[in-house]
Image (cartoon, rainbow, N blue to C red):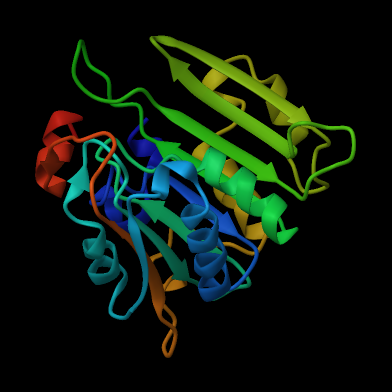
Length: 245
């Protein structure tokens, strides 16, 4: 599967942070401001000071502002501009970004489309390595009469040793729906298909130069104060070693 995923963002050096990325169809600054306002209103954030800071530099320099990674309460969230109408979202949890809930909420708050993009190579050998997964979730504004705001969801993932595939919602016109009938489950939604779908949506999300166009800043949201769920901190190297990357 690693060969099938040749071309991951930054050659996978920033996994687990970049194994999963959120995308919002809005500018990075507006996304960050809305996210910070939402976080300040949460009951769990009452003991925190939430700062919003502009960050410049290369993509890796910007990602380094998430460090150290957190084993407890998330302390830092990053919104990164791109060469498109989309902004990217990652966070500093040591196990990797968990974009589903934030993207669902932000789609409703801003009345925009948001994405959850997952690309993890299947490297499991015995009890070492990672379970592979390729996923695309599309969220939209709240729909009357519906509790969830999923627009489209497609995945092929190794769930504890067994490959599973599923999809829900109305297919986009560009989808390769005939491939969903492939005999081998993991072939029904591949990394190459994910990249193609994202290109149709206006994203080159696995290309380094897609991020941090000249003249634009990323935005770091930083929580300071007592944490409700204390946990150890990790360097990127420690997080990668613990995940057997």
